[in-house]
Length: 204
Image (cartoon, rainbow, N blue to C red; front, side):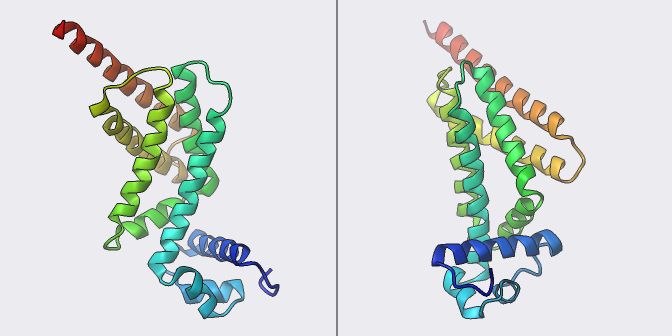
């Protein structure tokens, strides 16, 4: 592929695939635009044209995986979901399975971005995007207090991230991680629902 003339989009995808392969083999320390260009068989200006900086490359890698996670969850949720329990199970499986598909590279990319000043907003937006998806999914079956719903889902996403890291490191099985993510999310939603009901009863 390196020797063929590709469209701009296909070239970008090739460069991202190459960058992820470098991360997989060596971690993020060896990831530079010059190295990606060399491995992809293109000149350095081509890589710089697409990503401008190493931070731009890491950002593109992060957003690519984030998009894959969102799409995996949305695809799963398009199936007929008849209950809160089914929705939560689907979300737990989709998140863990997507991270497993990508492998530990996503954690490496996220850690690398976390060490770069000015990327906090990007990482926060990624978490909020997934939390919003979670919230929309569960609110098909239960109404959560407006002030608590997003905060609650951000906590759930944080827990899912931690469980996914344990799976990719080999310290936790896929089944145990899915089961834990399921229980955490369902427990949090049910607790919030119960608290809201009790608050409503007290105010009457």
